[in-house]
Amino acid sequence: MSLTTRIARGATAQLAAQVLRVGTKGLVMLLLTRVFLSPGEYGLLFYAISVLGMAVLLANLGLAKSGARYIAEYHETDPGQIPHILRSTLGYNVAMILVVSAGVALLHEQVAAALNSPELGPLLLLGAGYVVALSLQKATTLLFQGFNRVSYSAAVSVVGNVSTVVFIVALLSLGAGVGGALLGYALGYAVAAVAGLFVLYRWFYAEFDAAAAPEDGLPRRILEYSVPLTATRGANVLDKRVDTVLVGFFLTPVAVGFYTLGKQITDFVIAPATSLGFAVSPAYGERKANDELDHAARIYETTFEYTLALYVPAAAGLFIVAEPAIRHVFGSDYLGAVPVLQVFSLYVLLRAIDKITNDGLDYLGRARARAIVKGATSVSNFGLNLVLIPAMGVVGAAVATVMTYSAMVAVELYLVYRELAVSTARLLRAAALVGVVTVGMVAAVAPLSSYISGVATLAGVVLVGVGVWGALATTAGLVDVGQLRSAIAS
Image (cartoon, rainbow, N blue to C red; front, side):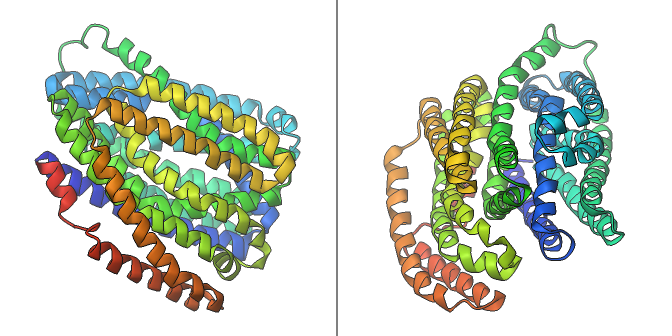
């Protein structure tokens, strides 16, 4: 199968999985907010999940991502090493998962007390199983990515998403409460992890004729390369989790609920960029291995152009409809999330650029540099949260996130510029055209927002915005369905 076909199929499969993930996650959000949980209970659930997310980092480190990097490299040069890479990677990973999950179970009361939230204790005890299940699911999806078989990663995600909905709804319907919701997540991830490990063994590990012994030093190199990746993942967790933990520590579970809801809505909008970045990233490693960096640059330029064309207007539209969207979809009890969501409209654009850039830097061998940058900006984010949350409340956490993400994305783009011969003139031209299209879309949508009176009229205004964007983007030449495929194939 050609590289073009693999990327196209992978991107399509990953996007389909993301659409399903967004749909199932949206269903769960609506059920949790409108049917099963109060704002305080909703916030408590995701307060616990944020704390457990840090444990998942410790359980995974950068091991699976490091293994994926060496799979991508040795798949081209020495396939006989693939079984050894898989054995080493999973062996290290499972050992860490067992240690960390046992620690969570043993120390759940102490952690809850340190966070001044004793109600977290029972949830963290249940969370030991959550850590095992989610860690294994993440490991399998990353290893499939290393094989450039993103469709398998997508399939594992689909299984996990569907399973979590089934278990969460079933347990909450039985009156299991917040603990039942957390257990539902754990069971869904466990089903996906088992399915992923089975496929990984049956259709990948067993298909390679293993070399008599691993290449000298290869297991050690997997561990070594996991160190900067761990730093990067740690920084990601600081960005994605510690702010929520600090909101809970300084404020209340209700504030956590508002903050979490704003962040989760951005996850819906970011799905296409997540899919594209995940699918395209291994191609950079393959092109570098084949000394085709010019080709890799063209892939990145085209991907960047499409990301700007989609997400600059999306960010503007999200800012405009934030208040009516929260009011009519989630209810007036959650209006405290409106200013958070408006600040996060810029975060949507920053995350989109990050999604198409960060994995690619890892596959280009720049994991260490990116880890340093990510670590520095994440520490800054932590410090800003300490200052801004007491001063500005929950909005302060959102402002801190946007400020530090801006700095991080700027440096990531600089690293890409240093690694690949990207055309800045081409990207600046695209940015200018996108700006014109966005102004036209905002001029059409902003006056209509005052007429939104329910979900139907909200959907109508959104559709008008999409239609205006599509017409302007096509006229400006920003949308060309075959352009990305041509860039990859050239």
